[in-house]
Image 1: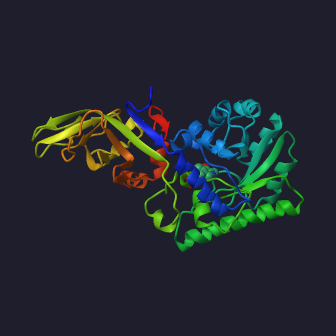
Image 2: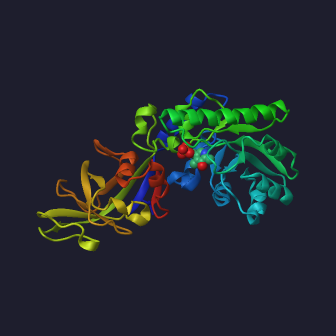
Image 3: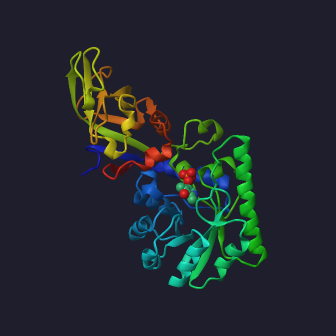
Length: 372
Ligand SMILES: *Cc1c(COP(=O)(O)O)cnc(C)c1O
């Protein structure tokens, strides 16, 4: 199966490599990029994306769960794979077996990992103000103690910025304070003679909006995929990143909808005049938000057409009255280009009232995924 018979994602390899290059320009030579390929590489396909990146010289990756890390290992990804979240102690043997690096989510967790033994690699999480994971940055004695624990190997220390995408003064001050606290921690560790760890705090917006700061590593996610979290951010980050993903579906049939007839579940759309409608093989189970019913769009033969009626689990309906020659077998583009027209992930996110990260990461496992 070619993967393009029903609904599919096209991953543009050139765009991905371009984005890596652009991000590297900002972070500089001494900073190692550790792409976030969690959540199936934000829907793009984690194995596919990681392989392209590994072939291009990327050695380190971060994921959200042990399971994601194990899949990458089984598919031949060899570098450091950092699990950014909690892993249940039952899975510790697998961390060892697959050589995955675990985040120290707090000091108690570090002790549990230590008791398990097995020389598991860890990055110590430091909480500088997000208050999600990590040891509080003002508890230096606890942070240092991670290095004294037997049975684990500390290869990194990191924190996470929670408002680096913000443009208000408060957001900027908060972010600078987070970076200051983190730098204080790493300086203090080095002053105590602790070496051999790599430090990192920047995700996409940390890189784009705070380019002057440079750490040993950075963890770009959304920017790597050439997308801003939301449309408004474009102004701020004037980067020439290229979208990596296109989302498409095949039109299965085209038909007339007589005036006064309704289409789809719940009678939410009624034709005010005779329409031509097309049924595309993609639905909310594939990740098209149901909230785009009667408000989203697609491109057919370069023409922007509305989604009409309720989006179903596996199918949706488009009004193709204005598309000359629209026929079964045509492609409908939900994100990406068709002739001269384009729909961006940012637009879709805005229409759906969310951010692109959510739209992309929820693109389903049922979609075909091809590299173009
Ligand atoms: C998801 C995540 C990232 C990547 O975030 P982007 O904003 O997509 O670049 C980086 N670090 C941590 C801890 C994350 O959870």
